[in-house]
Each structure stands twice: as C-alpha cells, then as structure tokens.
Image (cartoon, rainbow, N blue to C red):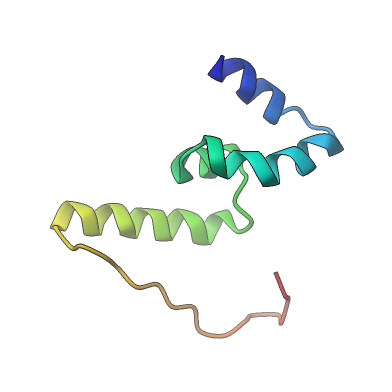
Length: 76
C-alpha cells in the first residue's frame, strides 16, 4: 500500500503538487519528505535534520535553529 501511495505521490503532474502539500505531512516522516523532495528548501532541511539527529545522539532534549538574513529577499 505504501509503495503504491509513493508512486502516486511522486508522479510528475500538477495534481501531485496540490495533493502532496496537504497529505504528505500527515502520512510521512520529515526524513521521508526530505527524500521525496517535498521540502521547500532541501539544502536547509537536510542540515537541520542532521543537526537534530546529532543532538539526539548526544542526549540534548531540544535544539534551536536560527536563520540570519533573507538572502535575495525572496518570501517563501
């Protein structure tokens, strides 16, 4: 079932965009969404995810992530 759902969600059509933005966060973990390319800025998402994994391994209960600046001024 999950493989079929992954095939449907990764099919490159416009409906995929509308469907995945609402359903993927409910069905898949952050790691799965990162692998599927469903994170808006995957280069940031990967670094933050790895930092969270490292913090967990080191026994930290939580982390803080701060972004300074806005680069080109693009609004998400």
